[in-house]
Image 1 (cartoon, rainbow, N blue to C red):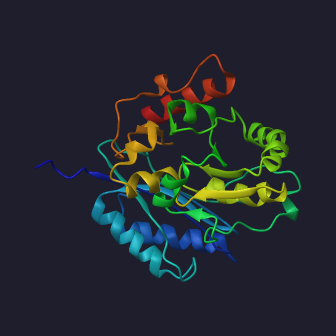
Image 2 (cartoon, rainbow, N blue to C red):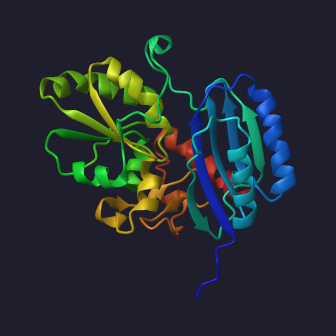
Image 3 (tube, helix red, strand yellow):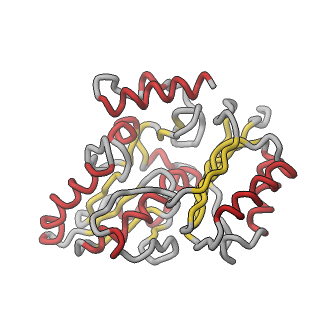
Length: 279
């Protein structure tokens, strides 16, 4: 029997209004110090909610997650944690920060859009997502960066060629008239789901019918024991592990194999990944 991996990674988010995110940040720092002194990663709090990527020993992570659920800060519905194990410490330290948004995406007329709804019926379970992959009336849209699509993707997924999120906006605006004319449903996915939740209201404002993979790629790989039927390649993760395979196992891929240094946006990402690896 293999030894249990020393690190358990957890990613999660929740759109839930916070009246005082600064006070919530202070409380979460106290919880981490008391219950999980070995906790590493990033917690971002904003008036719209929380987004986090964390790692610790399985016991410490379980204690922190339970306290977070019981804190009452994020509504009554249970937080959904997407877990993956690893032998590499994914982060160098714990950072709890307060920002204007948990994910900042620059949409046209953003102030006029309804808030994200992570529980609406546009969210498909992994099993339902698998069923739509072969539908001819569906456009399968990757809502990530180009380098992430290049490393791995759902079969049949379109690459919008994103080096900056404005590229995604431009691509969708260009394609939307044809998709509407052909009565296509746009099914999109991202790594953990938060980016799609933030994007969906804007896409609907263009008159598009939008579906999304609930919990993103990580939930699909965690939920489907034969996820390799649907997923091709590896999934990039924004920590020292670099990439996971379809079974959420850390791969041997290094940053130099992910980023193209001839592209300015990827060159700085490569340098940042190398600094992260050294920290």
